[in-house]
Amino acid sequence: MRSIAIFGATGSIGGSALDVIARHPDRFRVSVLSAHRNVEALAALCARHRPELAIVADPEREGALASALEEYDLPTRVASGPFALEQAASDATCDTVIAAIVGAAGLCSTLAAARAGKRLLLANKESAVMAGPLLRSALAEGNGELIPVDSEHNALFQCLPPRCNDVDARGEVRRLWLTASGGPFRGRTRGQLAGVTPEQACAHPKWRMGRKISVDSATLMNKGLEVIEAHVLFGVAEPAIEVVVHPQSTVHSLVEYVDGSFLAQLGQPDMRTALAHALAWPERIEAGVALLDPRTLSLQFEPPDAATFRCLALARQALRAGGDAPALLNAANEEAVAAFLEGRLPFLGIEQVIESALNELPPQPVVDVGSLVERDLTARRVAARIIRDIR
Ligand code: NAD
Ligand code: MG
Image (cartoon, rainbow, N blue to C red; front, side, top):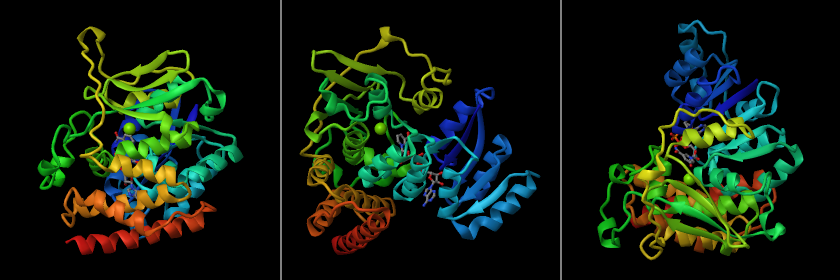
């Protein structure tokens, strides 16, 4: 019986994870659920899944969470604040952590789970992007296992040899191919992107996701973050990580071996497949996903339009620059996406903010979490100033 903590339980990934878990009460028990501020939604999930512990990240909402749980007459304990997440990631309450918080806010709990040797189901790609070297050393220290939930990386994990985090050292793989849907604006010109709204950007053709990752998919920054994530998780150099647009979102990624073989993983665009795989690995379990009939497939592949969607090149540039450049890129992107969603920045302003912030801040080596968080804050301040200047 696995006992599972879900950080970011009220989100899109959290909901998909709970759906899979509830299908297998003989295998999984929910032990911890967390949310940012929405205590009503969190309490409703607690009533349904009965965890030992509920955590609200915002300390000011702890009292409200306790009252909401009392209404359901639940014995669930209550905690709040970022340290409560790290504590729950490390102690004996759980053996598996689903890192499903969005953004840099997921960093410390992800690292804590890795250090504690938990089975870490990583959806929070931003933590791998920000802190690649720290995540890798935390995993080595904890001797646990990381199973990627991001669909592309989950596909690569399935197509690579078992426990393969140093692909280049093995000399067997020529390239990783990350597939991209192309997002809601595939085929548009820059002129057609100038006035797009947050609602248009969040209307993804294939995936239902939280708003931040939906905007990242629309700018192609999501694929840029995923190139960095693949480098961190699998130890593949940047030039050997290709991106190919595949609008059907059926092939989730491909591994090209030196003998000319390609291995791909196919499935519905439904995150429950990746979550079920990661929860049960190395076994397989029912995920509740719609059937896929290969006879109905017609698969298309094309190069990404890097000239129109410049975020992909910016992410590659940050990865090549090394040090904490990916963390700076991530912080500037989070600030720019938030400003776009709040109507304070045009869509094409997002790439402009990231480019200017990277130009202003030369990378420094990644030393520890403390200095990394400082640099994240610096990049956010710089990005906020650039956003004000653009308006
Ligand atoms: P979401 O916005 O739907 O949910 C985010 C969750 O994080 C919520 O539970 C929210 O309460 C919590 N949260 C937000 N800010 C927080 C903070 N400051 N402190 C603590 N908790 C906080 O997002 P999502 O779409 O579920 O994505 C979650 C992560 O998974 C992201 O990193 C995303 O890139 C990744 N991911 C998502 C999908 C998908 O299909 N949704 C696919 C691949 C990867
Ligand atoms: Mg993905």
